[in-house]
Length: 119
Image 1 (cartoon, one colour):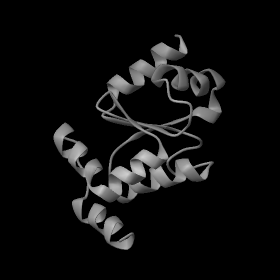
Image 2: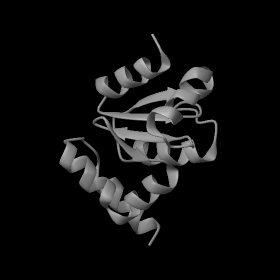
Image 3: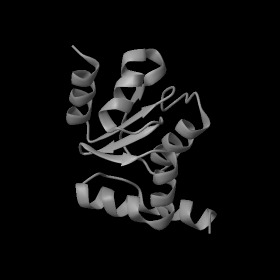
């Protein structure tokens, strides 16, 4: 299976996918760690894809999204963005709204605690 087909299948089969360096339990870069940390803290069930384990996937996800950096977050098949965008969306409440609109379960109290801690 091609990298593009693997990426497409992963995005279609999982409501939330994070293409990242490392895994959700052991991130291998600060940006991946931040996004995985937010999702973990908010109790979001997400698939993690370690791009460091497969060079074709690492380049393939950049081509697939036309986005040059890792991590990359997908929600219900939609590309959301990287670390800066996810951080901004978390702090503004937009990520909560996206999860609610897409029917993704998350801990609203945890999301509010993130915003309180960064106010």
